[in-house]
Image (cartoon, rainbow, N blue to C red; front, side, top):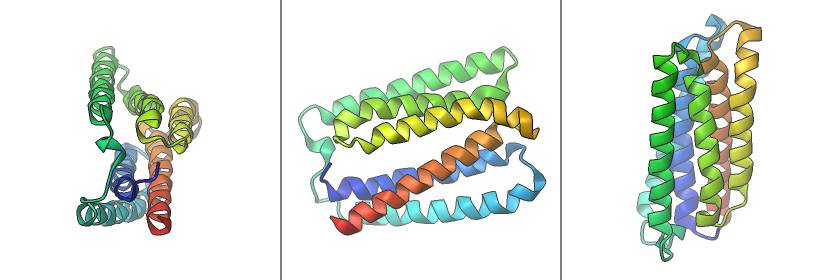
Length: 176
């Protein structure tokens, strides 16, 4: 990937969604974690807002999504992600397994980055996918061991991963 606007969008998307995951982690964490989750959420959101600003001010720059068919493929992956995550979440809630919704969503989000690798021509998206999939699986076991909601572990893990990838977007933006 060699598109400065896409690096800014990485910051925007990963920063804002990292903040969202830190927010979801506050469903039922240990009480002593709440302050740190709030701080992490704010920093991630601030980075996302900087990414939004840089995206808007660099909108004239080329994007991987400008390539023939890339935006259509992106939308297909995005809508498929929402549909599969939504249906799975609905089924988990219906079957009284709502504690696994966060892990399910993180798992599906991770899978969707595998497809996005070819669109953005960015092999680091494979690493992002792997980390999100791993955290979605580990959180199921770790949350029981720590006696917290699954969303606490999933949210912390996904939030940290996305925040780090937002920072990577910033570094790539600066170096481009």
